Picture 1 (cartoon, rainbow, N blue to C red):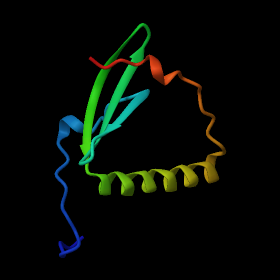
Picture 2: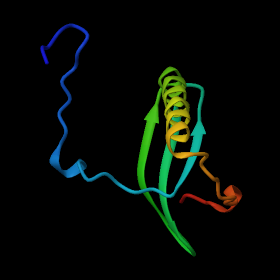
Picture 3: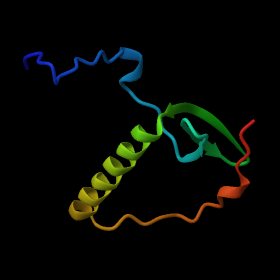
Length: 93
């Protein structure tokens, strides 16, 4: 792949390649940013595993990309069933 003006080479650090599992997410916002807290909840406690802060414009692009990928996933594998997890019981300290 050649490096043109439209391409960005991404450095992928070894310690991030395995990823981090999250089974719950809390999203908040201010006027200037969205805050995404990714959690690993194993009742009766949970742990914040990652916090990502993005601009409103990036959040809109991200949400569109996620929806497009959910549609592709469901077209290939079938409808995703949602669990009804009560969201009002999560308290990040």
